[in-house]
Image (cartoon, rainbow, N blue to C red; front, side, top):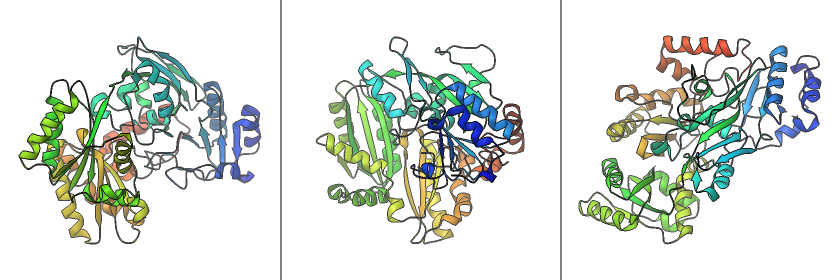
Length: 463
């Protein structure tokens, strides 16, 4: 059990009175859970598990009165430290709030509780010929509430936008125990200030999202996946744009991998045939859909090969081989092979992408020849997940390397934080990037919604 002295007298007992034994986890029962992406996510060792929005609101009212910090958690898949906890805080997990309350196929909308995982929603929509319009590798554990709170992006963002564009309405438990309900299911809603937008990407610092109304899109149907290998990003972008410009052909995904990531990961997964492919600077996993898609795509790729832009094209022969390609893209074996690396999440306009990566590689070599650069990302929207590794762990060098990774991004119109939020890791970068006026306004908004400072303390903005 967590030490009693860490909480005000009677706090744990009051929490148990509100939620019952099933609604509270303590001590070893918390530590037995999967901590997810960060080893300190469960350090608080006290977890509330409300089963309704009303219970969430009552928990927050109790925490406000007791001045206990609250850290909301979904699937704990965030990579910026937004779910990290410390002793004396309360984890609020929405794992029991996992009901899909409404699916309306004619309106193409759904209303779900925040603890529903993306994969569960995808499976529920499949019989209706619909998809959420957002997808990511952590679909099996990432929750809709967590995705709203971090404004998740993922594979489909270049077509359908980030979570901000998928959300029609929200219900939110506020720090003072009130519930804000803005669960409209229409796109056109100009009823005053769009308060719901403030909670998207706020990482639980303003309130806890409890229900979400989502816009859905038609299932694109049968798709064709393939892998292109190239020595230049320019060629990959030209292929991507050619696919988008081809009638009756729709680009469903364009997932970028640096050649070293592809080789290391394929080898680590035991995929010998993929690991033995011709050396290339970049590999791009393309997925297309549409009538006559395969023949149109083959013609397009043949032209690119004739121009000498492609080293090779790998077309999976069956669903198993296609899954292997996705495994290489979504598995981050680099961290297992060379642990202790540093991870960054940036966005770069496509016209500046090749120049940015070339300059970044050169900066790293000049700074420390022992540093290695690995890249995966969503090519169609320029979102790159950059990892810098070395022969030995370099975990303590985050801020030092960040200066090299972020250099030049502002000048080309990019961003230092693409789709994984600020959390703990990027607070200093946010202060530098946003500037004093923006930070002052963010703090003012925080004060309006959370004057006691109990909501995810120290995340996004320094306490």
